[in-house]
Amino acid sequence: SQKIEQNSEALNIQEGKTATLTCNYTNYSPAYLQWYRQDPGRGPVFLLLIRENEKEKRKERLKVTFDTTLKQSLFHITASQPADSATYLCALSYSSASKIIFGSGTRLSIRP
Amino acid sequence: DTGVSQDPRHKITKRGQNVTFRCDPISEHNRLYWYRQTLGQGPEFLTYFQNEAQLEKSRLLSDRFSAERPKGSFSTLEIQRTEQGDSAMYLCASSPTRAPYNEQFFGPGTRLTVL
Image 1 (cartoon, rainbow over the protein chains, first blue to last red):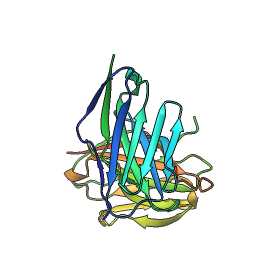
Image 2 (cartoon, rainbow over the protein chains, first blue to last red):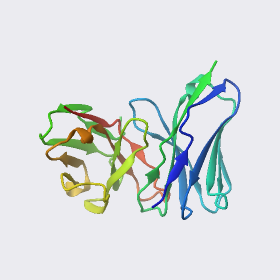
Image 3 (cartoon, rainbow over the protein chains, first blue to last red):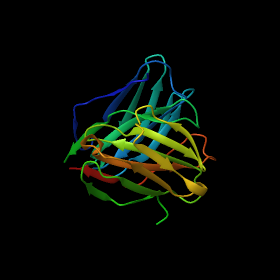
Image 4 (cartoon, chains in turn yellow, green):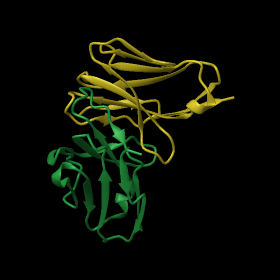
């Protein structure tokens, strides 16, 4: 079965630096890979989606890359701010109609 | 607010009792998903509806769990004979079929504690 690996240890970054989070998966490459943000006690919030035939996607300070050879996605937050502190979840799906499989998330802390 | 809503937000029950949760998706969304999330883990897929049809159900879901979506609007998730291992956050999400990318909009969740 598909397995998603995200850094289990929290990532601590100085404000203003670029935070880079990693998502690795096993088996077949998904059609879609998504990133969500989750704050404590709340539901995840969609951030970005990248398709298997796309290498990179950007949205404001966020950038996602997708390398199907390495079976890896990287999620970058540039000019990080304390308000970016949250858990970030990687999720994948094999079609637009299939279920989504989530990783366990990486907790990001941005210190002032 | 036209987001996904869930009720109740918190539920404390004793082992062996039945509980039912409700989810109201965004009104124009055809798809509705239920997930379970425990501390330190990502959401775990339970089941998925398109309109009123239940299209997929996790093999992890025991016979004690059942979900319905009558008339393709709100959905209910029932857990019968609750066990302490059922304690978790239960999340509902919806997505529109017009989006090819199944971006999901999550509700705030229902936190279940089984004593």
